[in-house]
Image 1 (cartoon, rainbow, N blue to C red):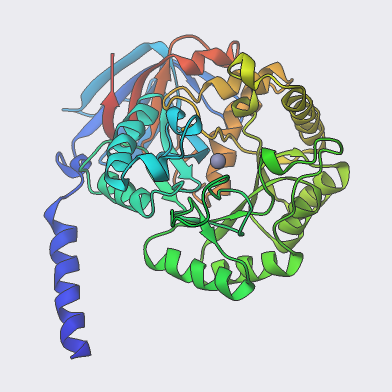
Image 2 (cartoon, rainbow, N blue to C red):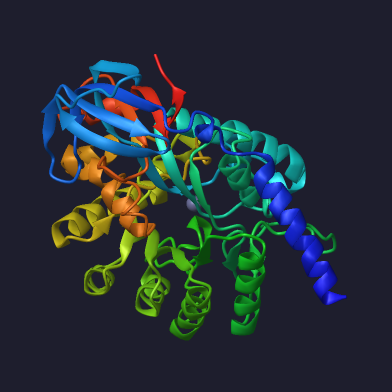
Length: 429
Ligand SMILES: [Zn+2]
């Protein structure tokens, strides 16, 4: 019986995977030649005038100034623009919309089906803004819809970035990503998984991996409402032993752990426990930053999402937090912490996350470093540095073009005119 079921399942998988070939294989072997105005290489910061990139199928075949255009190649003229690798946003929420942050939580007001429809529109906007790869950190109560969207993109059903998804996130009862202030007598699903013991955390990781998670997201501290208004100490949600157990179980499935951690003991437990990246981290002290340097922990600061958007948001507490965020960011740069571009897009309008670059540079980061944070360093965080993050022969053809020169004015990255992902054009002038 078991083997019969297995055979049927295998057959279904074979049929499904062959039913919808990705669109970029439609014109196998036809070369595309992209004429670049200025080609920016984030690896060494070089700018090459009049380079040509030759793309075949989903890969880059050649990149060189004055390279010969192969006979019969389709030519794309981007000679009026700056050309660079596709951008990577390491902290997104494709199933979150700005309106979900205000008013009743979406787990109460929206079906998962409707949220998925919104997610499909969101990934298109993010891709057209130049983000060819994204790590999505928590489906925010929309279950495994992030897996469905990722798979829809990979099979060429819908346009969107190359996605790495984390499905549900691990939290604790009463901690971050709980519905707060509701009647305890009615059963309403919480947006994240409440895992109050180590065994529960391990079981939840297995369930998430089984249903398609690429990353594990752990809430090592609470959120703003849990921060002590006097000391700014965040709520620590996990012990060092908890984090070690989570990281070890994730590693068994060859998955990495991203940890939301504002600072305090929760952040230190996350770093010492071996998570690959710290998210937000605006209240980390010098000791935590030192631990990150020693362990090579990546950091996604997500600066802009904490800026007050309305006068009602502009509280003294938030101003103190934003000012600490800036200080920690500047220290982290000096200390050589591996800062990766991450935005929390979804909490604000999809497709507008390139605004984060401007704030990073306003806080003192050089434009080239900001560009690296969203290309080669982000690719390293994702363990994808051999595939994406720079434009070199053999790599995936993730290529964008912008108006202006981002090395002079980083806001040029908000003016994306062309997007190619894996050799397929998704936006052009
Ligand atoms: Zn987030």
